[in-house]
Image (cartoon, rainbow, N blue to C red; front, side, top):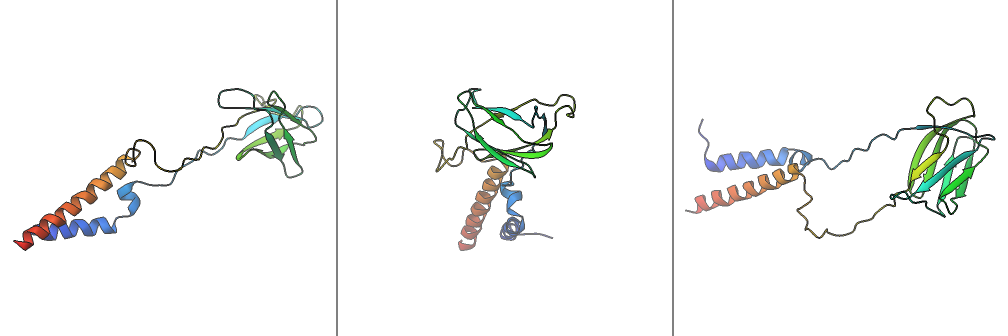
Length: 170
């Protein structure tokens, strides 16, 4: 069976149209690591202690920290050294929110925590960065290799159509 250039171009373009977009351009979904729950032993009276640091390891003062369990929800603001203390908790899973970031932990009553449990939280609060517009390098610099391949296939298909149309006109 002999195929003309025009038929091959049409077949190539048909295949491009039926392939899922993520096969051509690469997947756009991001996978996130599942958060690891840390074991934290409560101090006397169900006290939770912790500190909030910035990405450079410096204490962050005045940050609101919220700890929620199925029984209680408490909020506190960090002091000048980035430290916080909340009391009245019992053991169980808790959610910790610092700004927009959320974390999870297992709280253990004093004397019941597994070995290597933490005695306090240390939370590195990395502010959310919003980037708007284009970067200085231009739009195409941040493309993945699969996206480049898709772009090259598209350009090749367009060139093949143009050549095929020119051959038909002669």
